[in-house]
Image 1 (cartoon, rainbow, N blue to C red):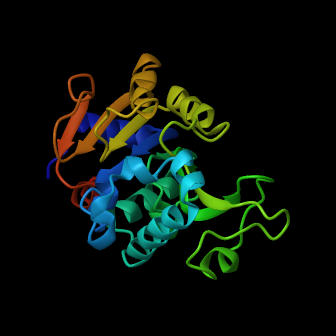
Image 2 (cartoon, one colour):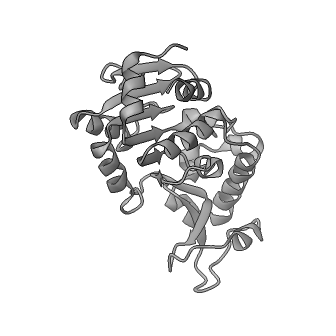
Length: 242
């Protein structure tokens, strides 16, 4: 792929870059969307399981679903797009990677400054005392485990339907978007708010906004450039052009 002089110039000169990633980059690693579950999970819609009320009604069922999801995610690996972002972070003094994904693939690839807007499926915590649960604790049973301190139910550390984003996370993301010189929107549909507002915040502050996606989105008409295709192919090529 041939890249414009503008994108090369902006990336070479940028001292502050903010990146937003969505499900598209994970899908390239084989992370399923969980809309086409198999077996037992065909009976449920994600909205019926990924909410606090469902967890309180049937904690074992919801816990088993997340254990199933974790197993699938453990079987995939970060792709070339994830690794390209790790390399880009090494080159830029101020680099923030904001992700809507909960699969931990960015951290597994080696990214350091990651803002997880929707949490992380690898973590869990007690709904009563908020204590973090150890991996041993959450993997030791197929039933919803209990906190070893207060006996409360332990839940996945992800944002469920109807819940607010983690305290301070969106503020960090928005601050990074507002101070960056280049903003990359990668593999996201640009329809899930408040994350979808970040590239527009960057635009308001004069950042050069680049979209990398397999198809056009609501951001396309406003972005300075849109690169259509897989991030695992485009990002390594873009890095090699710098």
